[in-house]
Image: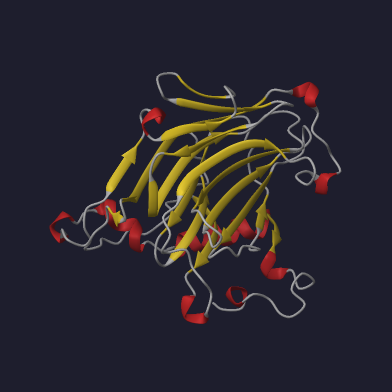
Length: 292
């Protein structure tokens, strides 16, 4: 990928699976995979479907969503974030289901004053419960070029990665009573919006509208995923003869090299971890924080 850094490592040791066929969506044309959902002309797919842009001004932000719903997948998107003084803005890129007990897997990019780093905010909701925030600085300027942000979601774990480097793993600990997103299909959503009541330094820094419009850009979407259609998954187990390496993400886990990269990212770039916030959880940390 054009934006891969020299520090990137292969995310996963691939292990073949005996599973049925699945849909592999590789979007040479973003029009095939996404619908602009709001923004009154502030979101656009251009360059023959190769580039999607979201814009924000004082009147409105903008957003899009995937045409497909997914139940597990390895999903990549390259983003270039709002440059310059982006304080008060949030670029959200996430998977989410519907309803009051929804599941959700979040990347949110919190803007900042020129010269100050973006904050990458991650969260996992299961059955309507979130409060699992981890936040990071990035080891590059995310506004200068495109970088790849990935979500690996399989029945065993969720892994967040940046340019192939894992930054967070959320394991399936249902055996310990922790709900895990596994039954509700989710769409991909993204939006650029004004959140200057909380996004930058807790709302102390407001959006400078003289810098508008603010624009974020997207390209090179790829989803190796189980598509949910009419109550059925494209990853049925009816065709074991179709086994291939494309299926491997359904059982992927972090190998030793990737675990080292995860530790490197968390040691050097994590700035908030709910699992360390004893003041927030005076009755005890959440179960997943105390279970290996």
